[in-house]
Length: 255
Image (cartoon, rainbow, N blue to C red):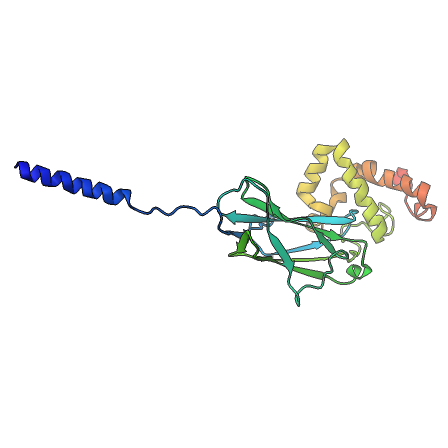
């Protein structure tokens, strides 16, 4: 019996020794990490394309932030990743149609962004056609692309025609793009003085009233509100700056 216990004891020792010699895989801190794009649209759906129209926006550029993810551990230093335009499928010109901020993963982070500025004032051709920028992650000393590595941006500044909700009556002046743009400039100022009504209108009609046609237009419900906070200040602006346009506005008593 003693012999049996002795044999079992040495067998256990051998097993323990074998376990001690097991080679467990360790993370190589010097290896390249995988990087990929993960962009979600307003409906929280993954997509590889974004279309943007300046429309009535008064901004001179528009910022697009494209999230990127790193599959690996955070590093205690800032790391640079590389993104390039895809030739043959890109007709935007850097510095004319867009710029890209330095592309980095900050220290102790595994998330980053490709920050693209879409420029408005450097090429009048964007007022008549849509331009495309196809971006692609490129391998460098720190990262290699895997999975979703391309993203497509398309933009233009084609001026919208008169919206269907723009009243062709005494309520509003005859439509031009410039008057429409100034109209929305004043409308977006309303958020500071009447935030609750402003937010309600945005929920109902969308940015720049893109959903207004199906709802009969904001003047069906908010005529007096828009007159007080938008149309009267707008009329006063043109009284000072452009009397010719001012003369086609209705009198305040008609609001």
